[in-house]
Image: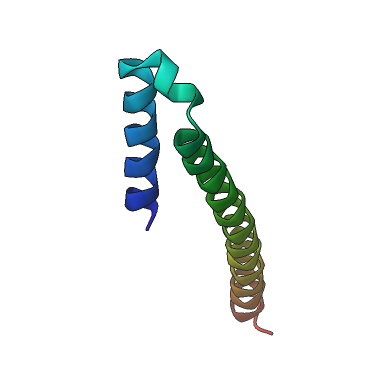
Length: 71
């Protein structure tokens, strides 16, 4: 999914570089706005997953301390 999203961004960038006037077309602006929405969603999902990974890591490391301390 991220590779597809990155390819879309690369495609938009290439279109803008090749034709500066095309950058202001309604279709390109809509594509950019859609990409922006996807980015916000991915960013939120990533933060939530990152938090869960941190919580799991903390719980696992606390459990290991208990094992090593004879608890």
